[in-house]
Length: 458
Image (tube, rainbow, N blue to C red):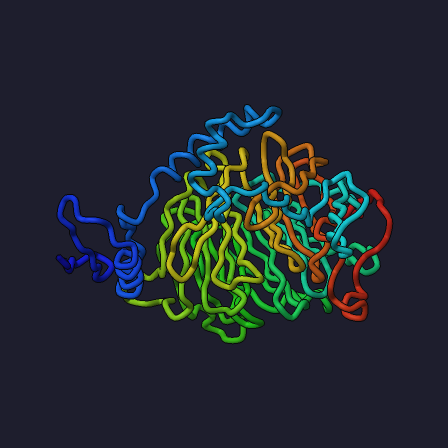
């Protein structure tokens, strides 16, 4: 009697026979063929299985190992003849597969399949290539008294004076000395033109000097009610200033009424200011442990919430900040004593992408212009400069020649050399970022003189 059964994978045809009815091999073979045509998967039939043969194969494979040295037993011979063991086996175990070819030889092997050699690790000098005395430098974490302009001239504030050091010929000159009533100098910043230098003072004034003619061209007053500890040029004529009063002011140095915008959000002194490369966003850090990201269009807005993002993850004052040169929306910030972390932010969303514990006060951050590297300067306990590989943040080098906390850092125009000023009254120059990728004609002003120990003060 034929029975049609519905299966999961398709239809299957089988038949049942009454007890004592002889088997019909041809019919079984026919039905087995029809089942394979109707079904999308193989469904075995018990009536088509040879259990004696299967039992023999399962019980004798293990015995072959034991009796491989002798003759098989008489029972095994008779059984093999009765079951026709000359049939071809399906799914039989074979020899082990060959070992895979090793395309990567051991490290101690002198031969290699690939002829291309890995890039050698860059040598990072552990000693500064030049040191200058910097007497009377103000040991104040919140100030910004060092900058390196595109004219390859370093400006540094030492007490009531501002000195210039020309890296192209190693010459030193004094630009300005202010009176005790308005000093000391609390911040310096070169304009993008490389000729004009902005100077923030302890009495809340800002002066703009022409470094070529050595004359003062502008004094900005009424911006702040306290010292001006941070400066940032947006372009050749917009100077942004941050004061002890927590205010951030945009000043147009071309017009008499120079205040053209104000950002309000910090409760304490603004000690860090950086414009993004595009000039669209401004980052500020304060002694209130806050980081703000501002849109340039928000200055003087009547909205009670002017900032684009307020970032509250740091646990100490934030002075160190730097925009990434190869990823425009990436901002790095560093916390002071009590925080000691470097944090990375997405300026579009305000999300904290990573936080790295450094173990010491972070006073400045600089991105490499040639590689994906970040340099940080620190206070106690090591007073060191640390070079990090981004984004893994693996330490590549630690430079520890300073004997007191590092206060400021500045980067040369070609991006290779870094100047660091510390409370030990030393200004050191480090060849930390490797060889410049700028053509020699564009980097002709770079100082290549050997190590020397001089004084900025004559």
